[in-house]
Amino acid sequence: MIVRILGEGQWRVAPEAMQSLNELDDRVADALQKDDQEALQSSLALLLEQVRAGVPVADDDLVESDLIIPDASASLDEVRAFLEEQGNGEGLIPG
Image 1 (tube, helix red, strand yellow):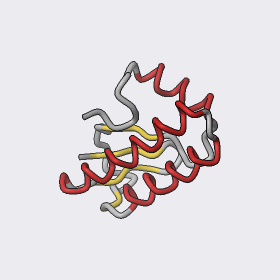
Image 2 (cartoon, one colour):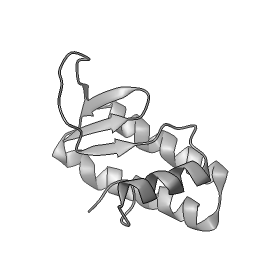
Image 3 (cartoon, one colour):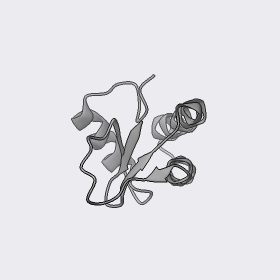
Image 4 (cartoon, one colour):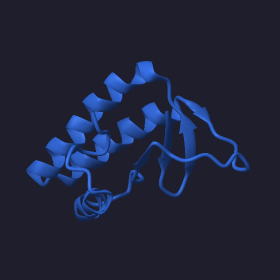
């Protein structure tokens, strides 16, 4: 699976990592629901760390991203707008 972090690049993430990514995505959704910016940034940072544990895609390797995730500095409103734009009611990681 190819995951893009906005403003950073893309990583190849092993299928085995998806369960952990989904759990972290649930924490992001919980932070959004509770309107908790601190929890959002903490959860996003952990999610992004997990993605970065994958294999970076070379800048000159043009591949389509399966998932796109905002950067760790994103605000509650920015993440909500991002999810609306993506048209995904399931969170950052569908599944």
